[in-house]
Image (tube, one colour):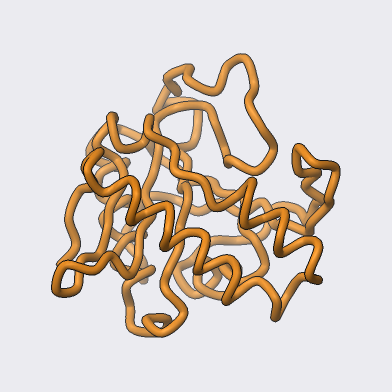
Length: 178
């Protein structure tokens, strides 16, 4: 069941995010990059939960997928904090952010990521956003492409510990998928 996350979910979201990174990233990144991502990318952003824009997929009391969107300026967690991270975006001129998507490795390829993207797309559109943007890690790139995101640029993300990983800046309209 897909539902909006609550603060009570934070410990289970944190455990899922870390496990997802440790299980899925080694196919795309080396051991040092995976370990850094488990610390710096697999973090819960309570602002998303407080804003009511973060979802979990609950399967019999277990959170097996999570992710959401944001109306705030922060694009992704891995790069650390920036001064305007909490700034509200202008939906007429700026893109809503897709954020913090994680799926438990034994639950991949079951449509959970797509369901979270669809819930996020609809909610962002309802608030007047016209476009979505995200910084994909390589394990998530195929899902985002299949959902209609297009690559804007490939970049190297430097984690707060100095480790560098490849990411893909992607966007799409909030129009329904075709």
